[in-house]
Amino acid sequence: MSKLPWLLSLSLSLLFLSVTADVQIKVTNNPADQLVTAINTNRTASKSSSLYDNPGLACIALQYIKAYQGDCGAIGGANAKKPPEADFVETFAPNCGVQTSTLSPITGRLLGCETKYVSPSEAFSGILMQNKKSIEIVTDKNHTEVGAAVSGSDGGSPYFWCVLFSNGTSNGSFVLEGGVAKITRPGCFSGANDECNSAYPSQVHHSWLYVASGLVALWYVFAL
Ligand SMILES: *[C@@H]1O[C@H](CO)[C@@H](O)[C@H](O)[C@H]1NC(C)=O
Ligand SMILES: *[C@@H]1O[C@H](CO)[C@@H](O)[C@H](O)[C@H]1NC(C)=O
Ligand SMILES: *[C@@H]1O[C@H](CO)[C@@H](O)[C@H](O)[C@H]1NC(C)=O
Ligand SMILES: *[C@@H]1O[C@H](CO)[C@@H](O)[C@H](O)[C@H]1NC(C)=O
Image (cartoon, rainbow, N blue to C red; front, side, top):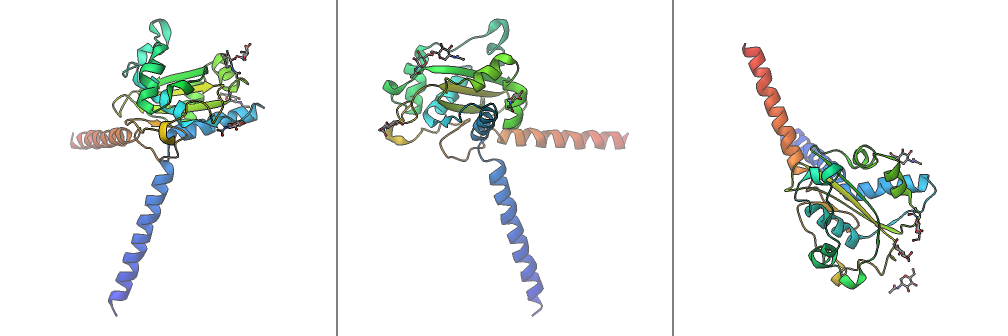
């Protein structure tokens, strides 16, 4: 009899645990998909069409990021570099399982890099939308599809965000062999209906480090 309240509180805390677990899955869903949502919301608000989220194109966007090998300095400014066009056929498509015959024109590209991880909506407005030109790229009426990716170079800082736009047809471009994208970690890409949080662990790690050093600092302050 006396066990009943205890059991009740145990099952209540289990219920609570499972609720928090659910919430976490929603929060870490897939930052690349959330970036595409931000782009399509901005497009429809600007009277442009919503774009098809193509997983083959998005996987290529992730390979595109990897070509920079974590070098933030190479994406803009005087030392700006771009992966050679041939990489699409020779490296990016094969890594993703995209049929090379279905590669289609890239009609726009957005690339950003930050040392700290920010939310997809902040990445959109704060990193990728830096000027009039990038707003034009996002709202360009020539695009029909989009693919987005985010990755830390080795799963950690710096964080690269890449969006590729194409004017290919949704069922005939960046077609995946066997219909499924090869998931290549680290990094997340849009359109594949997968949960992805590989951009997060090191962020969690960093905030723990931050908290830990904060505690140490406090301890010193009080000890002095
Ligand atoms: C689209 O996003 C840009 C950059 O954040 C913003 O300046 C613009 O107002 C947005 N457009 C609409 C229609 O919301
Ligand atoms: C759209 O495509 C047409 C034809 O390729 C081109 O002339 C035009 O400049 C493009 N528009 C934009 C905004 O890039
Ligand atoms: C797609 O864009 C490319 C490059 O801007 C252009 O040459 C081509 O005609 C476009 N294709 C379609 C179907 O609009
Ligand atoms: C692809 O889409 C086009 C137009 O949306 C359609 O005419 C065509 O039949 C589709 N092809 C396949 C293989 O589904």
